[in-house]
Length: 123
Image (cartoon, rainbow, N blue to C red):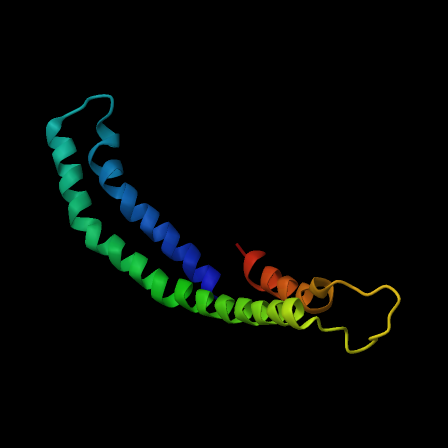
């Protein structure tokens, strides 16, 4: 859902960003008129609040929740790394294993796979 919204908002922002140039300057090329440039600039300034509103909406409805979710998962992974580094934990399922797996393989690989699968693969 959020990626669909992000795609729509990106397209909308791109259109709003390019509208002044496409409306007042590009149709009249190669001729260049200061009036066309001035109209394009005035339109760009008038559309600036719309671009800021789009950016604000994307930040509040997509980026902030995504960052909060990632921060929670990363914080959990960091806590496990801290425990593994300073407390020297051994795997609970086989403490006397001949070939112990690394701490990252035991505790963090699943966490990293979840983050990559859930968030990064969709970007």
